[in-house]
Length: 189
Image (cartoon, rainbow, N blue to C red):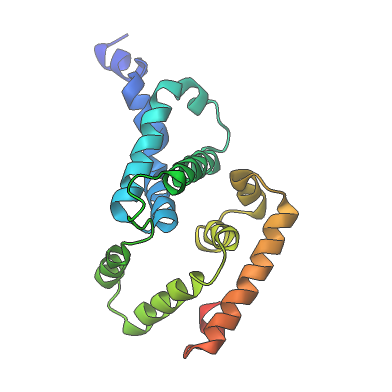
């Protein structure tokens, strides 16, 4: 056995194993965290908090069959915990949890030169604000991120029927909001 063979057969260090498992999902985790918090710093903190809590649980993480939905579920639960804690805290109640819209506009402006698409994205984001939190979460996970109804049900700990019901009602509400505005809903939905 040559030294090169030993190098490639050597087990990965714990940190490298963790990185290899989680790195492909960090972008999605951040996007979901940002959509829930609507704040760049809060989203980064949320993802970092979840990742630091998962480092000691590497063996459990490696044993998960569908890692992406599992990570989003962990992220969502942590978001809910932190949100409840923040809402119920008498300290710093003046800070708005959903306050950083500027980041999305910068991110969208940098990635898209097409003004019609930018206008459509803004209209959809404004329309999403008219949904309740449950409908918004289901639509984001299913329609935007492309998770199956079964995965969304697992992530949010609800039944598949509830996912389908919230999708239907949320889409119906989005259509009504968009039709009431200047954009045609068929372009957006």
